[in-house]
Amino acid sequence: MSLTTTNDAAQKIMQWADHLATFSAMEGGLLRAYLTPEHKLAHQQIEQWMQQAGLQTWEDSVGNQWGRKVSSNPALPTLLIGSHSDTVANAGKYDGNLGVLLAIEAMTQLMGEELPFHIDIVAFADEEGTRFNTTLIGSSATAGCFKPEWLAVTDNQGISMAQAMTDFGLDPMRAGQDKRNADDILAYLEVHIEQGPVLENLNLPVGVVTGIAGAKRYQFKLKGMAGHAGTVPLALRKDAMSGAAQMIGTIEQFAFDHGIVATVGRCDVFPGAVNVIAGEVHFTVDIRSQSQSTLESCCDKLLQNLTDIADKRQLTLTHEKLYQAEAVLCSDNLQQKWGEVVEKHTQKAPCFLSSGAGHDAMVMTNITDIGMLFVRCEKGISHNPREQVMVSDVAVALNCLIDMVKKLAVE
Image (tube, rainbow, N blue to C red; front, side, top):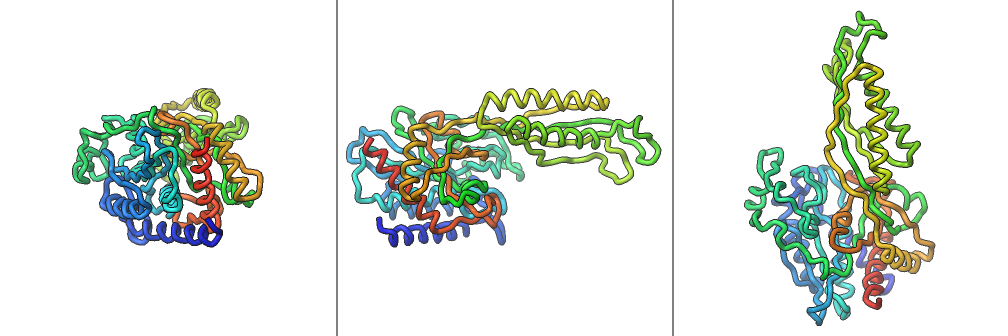
């Protein structure tokens, strides 16, 4: 493919992303949640683009949109390439969606080539969990990890996932029954914006992902004793806010000391009056590490440190684990191949970097090897309308994906 053709194709992908962003439930912004009218319209458009790329198309049991480049030998395995089409509220245009569109255009460029495997492109219908607070629904169904109890989860309107599936035209009793067979899958590839600043700081258009960090999220409740801000001496207080402040500082320092990331993203103070000692504080902690063993040991140590602070201050600390995801590693073989194509198209040594954010690929490890490519995004901004990528970087990513497919074909 010539440089002019590549740039034209990359520009087309950017135009597709602009068009896909019009399927939104948010006035003046982008919101496309699972099993909504916007989901249906977006997937109808994606299906049309897939068909134009010569792919056979279908919708699966949970609303994922698929397109297949068929090999002449039906007995051959299948290479999966995909990402997600849903968004968070007030989203950018490229998180998830760029990977889907790159895959479709790659199939357009490979339309006339016979390959020794089938290729299935997938737009996963839910990765973000925006509607039901249950993430990775689409890829979980594909990988055989769909949990039937999810069908009873309700959105903020009280509509269950089962009812939403029915309204969408799906049969909730079939959800996940069309899971893919690991024996038939060659590998899973995903191209995604970095959602971080590493590639921009290195002035590189793309990078090879080494693994996806595991994560645990906790809700803490710290109880003390509310009292008058002017009459209770400091030494006699059971100030939940002062205790929480010490804990938050401890969490940050602990993360620095142990090479992990930890974030207190929410903190609610009760009763929340300017002249009242805080009697209770609720706060969340998100802890991540690419090493699962490190994540487990750090969580245990940190929980003990916070408990010690509460005990010394005569406060009561309780916690609930809200979420956990296992750390996963990308295939060494696929990392090497990504690195070779990246070096070819950038004329620079490839950057290998880990992902602190979750992706559909982390679920797909249940059935196959995974390989991911990151695309530089401006200032590392994501989950934000200011999310931006450069056309030239999209062109590099497209060339890398096409050559990655070709490289797998000659193994």
